[in-house]
Length: 216
Image (cartoon, rainbow, N blue to C red; front, side):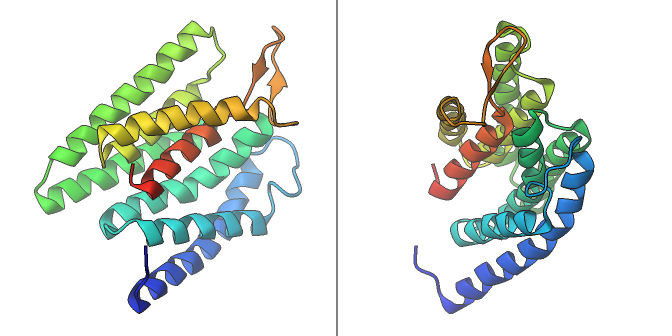
């Protein structure tokens, strides 16, 4: 995908905004972490990762209304992913506002454009993805946490705005990423039953991001 000069400035502007928002959100990350993690809680990690995410989204997403919603999810997704990676938990005080903001953002776009179809599909994907992970949580007897259900709903909503194939692709990619993390040293740990557990939130975010950037 080639960039025009205006497109290049749009991407650079998104990256600059990401630097500022990422640096600010690192304070949220530090507050949510129960233990001190020097790199995970650093301002520069949040700034660089958020800037990269917003730049990629600005490059690939032509719909600037949808970009605003994706960008909002990305800014909150970085602290959530960092906390889940470090401590295997997804704080509800950030996960629920992320879901609410995504739903509200897409709802506003539907009303502004007088087109309810993508919004209805996104809500359906929210229920489908969240319900699927809820069933998984029941079947694994706690192997999947409540936060994972909320983030699955977020991933479903984000990809459902575009189409059902993207929803399915995001969930499949999340499962693949989770399987890969099992072989990454330090990325998984054993529970009280001796089973390996991985931070599923970053996998769900990664699956959704891949589908958004590739267009399905």
